[in-house]
Length: 341
Image (cartoon, rainbow, N blue to C red; front, side, top):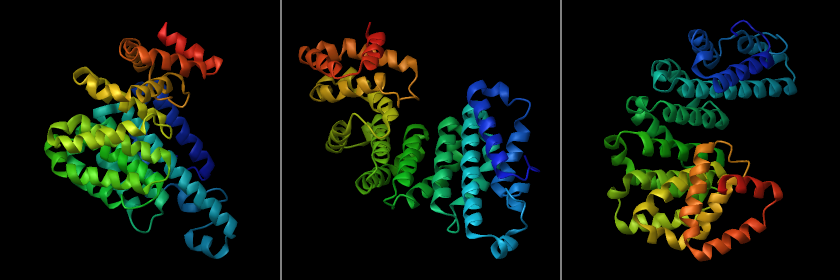
């Protein structure tokens, strides 16, 4: 990878490494992990041949590119640089998912190199990708959170003041991961700041997927820190969450919300009952919406069980469920029947 001069080849190679890690798991990396991590380091440092030489046409160094390249070629080269960074962060996410807690030592090597992309000289797209990547790494390797909590929490707060949907989506996801998995003694002092930050991003964002990530972040906060919140504040946030479901911009996050609802229903069914129609629609979306591609079959079976034992325990909801089913396509009805049979 270090000596290949064509950026398109590097892009494809990174995609192959990512797919191997996703499809075959740790066994695909066991004998090659040092090569993979070293290659990722070189790509992040931009020291590979394709990055030093200009990539697709072998033109000289950066100064020569500035003087001799056509603007169209410069733009194409920048596009390839962005794709390579995106593929590099995708591989880091896939490898961290593969390795879980064992990824910590490799984060020590890759983390400082990723952080350089958060500098003022880098475009917003670089920052969005790196923040999203680090959030996913901490999700996959929670034992690493304590060592980096202060620095990354600072990064998240510093990048939360924009109206940009892609940035707000990744920032809110990162805060949500910390709320869910950081040691309580680290996150709790930042609880009010985190909630205010997420609510501000929700109000500032127009894109539905970013709003949905803000809602999922609030859910994670309520799930773990309910005892730290005054009842009035909890009630307001609970109602805000319920008014937002089902989530349509990022439908996979309906799983986060429904898990929370199931836990609340187990102890406070009267709190959940007024929102049962929206909850029913959320359950149906999780079962039949093809965009819910990260929701595994185990949770879909749990969702169907919730419909049968909770939703259908309310006579009025049986009627509503039938009405919603009548609006479905034949394919959606077949999927629903498979889980509810």
